[in-house]
Structures are given as C-alpha cells and as structure tokens.
Image 1 (cartoon, rainbow, N blue to C red):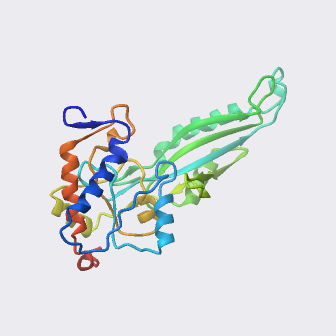
Image 2 (cartoon, rainbow, N blue to C red):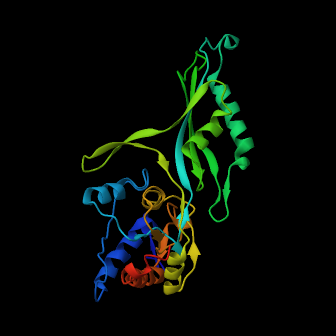
Length: 290
C-alpha cells in the first residue's frame, strides 16, 4: 500500500472488486433478492467461459448481472466484441536460392496486412462504443527456415466488433484481400485448473444496453453511464445470453494489466456502498423498464 493506493498485479483487475463485493455482502441488513456472488476463471483468455458454465450447470437465469470490472465507479452498459481470426495464406514452396520458382506465402501475407491497414477505417462504427478495429498480433510461416520459400503463412488477428456485425460479415471482409487462402475463427482447447477441458471458439459478441434501468441505477449511485474499451464476461451474459447486464467497479480500466497497476482505497470503499445499493434494488418492480 502506497499513499492510499493498493499497488500490484491484479489490484484493478480483479482483486479490488472481488474484495469489495465480498465485503459488501456483510453490510446487507436484509436480503431483498436472491444473490449469487460468482467469481470465475478464464475471463482473460475466454471471456464468458466460466460464467456460462456456472449458469448452465446451476440452471440459473438471473434478472440482473453486475460485472465488477473497473469502471471508475460509473455504470458500464456495453463494450465492443472481439473475434480471434486465423488467416492462412497459401503459396508454393521452392528452394530459397531460386525464389522465382515458388510463390512466397510470407510476402503475400505482408501484402494482405498492408491491405488490411489501408482499409481498416472502412470498418463499421457505433455512436457510443466507437469504431470496429483489427490488429495483427502474431505471424508465422512454414516451414520457416532456410533454404525453403514458405508455402503457408498464418496471421493471427484481433478483430474488435460493434453491435450488428455478423460472423459472416467479418470473415467475408477479410476474404476480399486474399488470393489463395482461408479465414477461420480460431478454435482452442481451454484447460481449467480443475481438470475440466472444453474446445471453444474465439468469438465474443458486442453488446450495448443503455436503457432506463441502467440510467436509474446510475442515478441511484450518483454517477454516470460509461462503456468499456476492453471485453468482459458481458460478451456472454448480454451479447450471447441476452441477460440484463451492467458493470460497476472500483479502479480505472486504463490501469488494468499495467506495470503500475493500482487501485485507490477511497474508491474501493465507495464501491462497497454501491454494491450494497445495487443488491437492495427492487429488481422485479423495475423488470419492465427496458
């Protein structure tokens, strides 16, 4: 602890909010609603994975989901989605001393990346969540060694989406830049520390729920409406499941995952009071507001 700040990895994302939520439960003088405090794993690499498992396993359909991701004590009502795209570019191998006899997949991959950069500003935009984006994050080719011209180049892309974009639209936009190749939504095997394993798809829908309910909660807490710049478990609860979802948490989202990650004690204790107020909402009387 330094000058009123808790400093360290995970202080903002998510140790601070988890501590505040747990402590807020002890502050409840009466329990108006059926409350579940759910803390799940794998949100960083496969958002929605843990909470989906919990809700399906318990057969629960909540009237409200409150995510504790950092909001600066504002009420978050959405974020862009994301898709993990695997782009495969095909060429023809030859001896690298005779490159003219082959088709260099690595060079072709570079050409495609330049086309993506030139056209990224044609991606759709949302008036609040902002513009969709695309960023290459990894690249490899095979066989990837001298003296062979590569016949395949794989590029991993982080595509951020806005509401209304379909999986097909996203893939077809990329296919327009490829001469020989394919575009896939990446699939991977998630392994939990419990031993549970599941193959999953890297697709997480965007969502935006700035309705009367969220605005009423913001007024109750004396704060404002905001959105996240990153993705959260709301990609499943709201984006896929259609469940009413808001975010409220201490800490600034810009400090998450940073070398100087830190959370202020004052905001931490304010969030405790906020969680108590949210827990005491008359959810049923507000159920028709959205």
